[in-house]
Image (cartoon, rainbow, N blue to C red; front, side):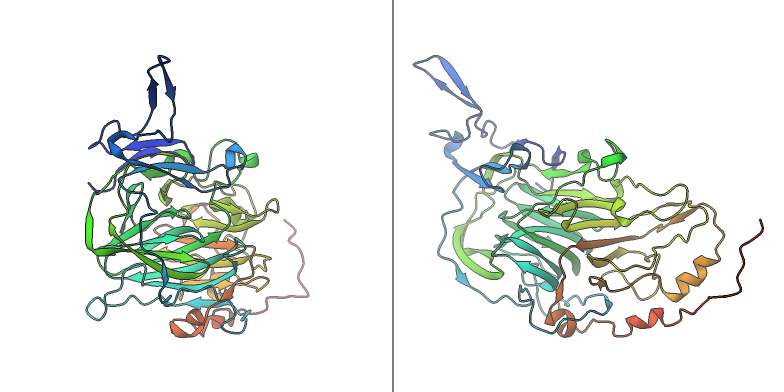
Length: 455
């Protein structure tokens, strides 16, 4: 069975059972002496098919109901059955934000290199590289931004992030993600979220690359719509989560569980597949979303709306209106604003802006910013259109036009002041040291004798 989706919606209460085991999801238990049935039984004394009941909690037990996240898994063996965890090398995955001195400059990376399978086999877990981040997984407050570059599937090993949620943005190559909840096929121009504590394995079909936004201490949610009203942006019905699928497979040579814990990697062994969940129910699940389904809100009169109107998902902080991280996209849309410079304006921001490109050309920098590359404009570091973009759009005829056709750029925006890792600044050797030159051609148009038009 490959990926299947029957669960639509964001944060809904779902239930699913593998059709090979009908009735595996506990629904009630007859009390013979009292001639009545107990409903919604999560933890029966004996589960159907001899399964084990296990709860996966994504929030504190006492969280308010709208924020309370948990799912019940009914599995062949519980996840507690494994040998002890031991430290393993972290490679280029890190939470050390003090490896190198801070760099406030505008930063841009050329497309990150994907290792050739003929030279070295690299799977998803081994191909994780931290570019930048801030905060601390121990205090449950912070983020990490990573690239994954790999060429081979994970064989008899899976990944588990005890530190936070992974928002995965494939850029090159589709990925088949097997989770405890079922399978998801995720292609470029789609995203998926694997929430804290969920075990998953990644199959690839060639040279594969993508971006990851990791958040500690908060889960992604849909942004509030406010005056927009009831509909718009990413609609809940367009989110999909997998249906139950299990494998009852012994692994005599050992199955490896890789656990990211307090910024480090650990591994343990067990002799069976962790994807042995026959049925599950709850509201704490992995999920995916197709970016083409985003309902764009845009300016239809004049001026330039802030990019917050393009927010797909947000991870809120404790400060109202301030996010730990927002996932923002710049999809194809119509530009119709009158008397307005239409590309993004020149800007200094109290937020950090990490941008990536899935496909096409970003409107404000059509050269240099390439799919599979990235840029980082740190807190209060100025940025905006390059010289060519400014000159072109200052004189363009302001007629309705399609913007970003065939393109999908995105931004990870954060209230944290992010530090770039040694790998990001040096080891990867993809930093574009000439990035600053894209603004060198900007020239003064100041005319002290200018007079307003008499029209």
